[in-house]
Length: 335
Image 1: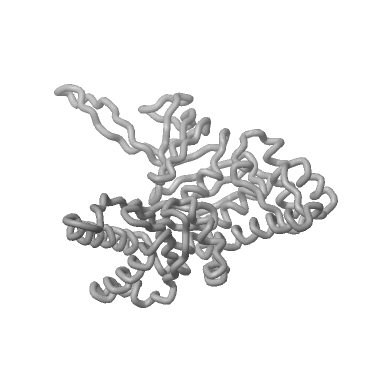
Image 2: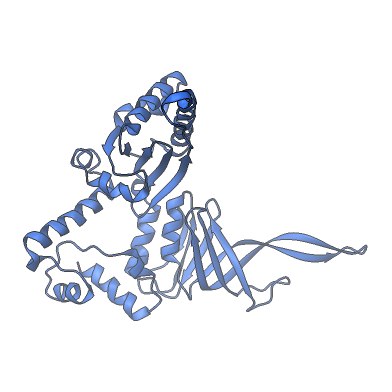
């Protein structure tokens, strides 16, 4: 995400102008915007225009500022819908009237807050630091189903889902199976080429049950050479195989915690977070007096200065209760 301009300080009113460039940027925006904030962005509205020969409908481009009252995030579409009251003088939209804006990739917007806390400022840093963007890609594959995922510092996005009805391998349908399987592999190959940028990701993990993953890796490497897909050829050593119980998104946790893979992807943020969670589980089993969970116990440990590593959910930072959010912000700052 590009930081176009800024004017804020911790604990004070201020603004930031941002330009989302990729899907994970929208997740950061979703976590930054809250009720009561002011968002300025471009929108379109159909209006009746009298041209003398009758009224025509035109689609006008307007720049509006809304006081946020509702936020909806479409993760698959990469769109955030903002609902609220209009704060901009306009002949087409009354002051105080309810309206909506859509925030999406490639369209700049300005976010103004009455007070910026440490969590908001850290979120801006994470969102605008290119080195912290999606750094791991994964293909979860089995016969007839594949998901191409990008695993970032804050979220996992399914960029493509490929499905195919495969005939039986034996008997008269065997020939049809081979053709359908080749088409399926080709569609997955195309999805990888389209969505995996080796200029950003540190490695591509191909995982799943059975031998489908092995066959796809062979197909990927052979087709990359045949079609002269340079990014795949030049990054062949970044393509890894891993076992997984299914081709669904939830199996990524197994992939990231697999010892053989963990050592290769240890520098990715996703791997560090999985490692930290596993360390917590191990400590909880071995020495439960040193592993705490739940608000009460964690805040008590914080008061004693006894927290070495803190794991906290993003959802706690999206609450609209000011006092509770401030409490969580102070917890994070104090560790």
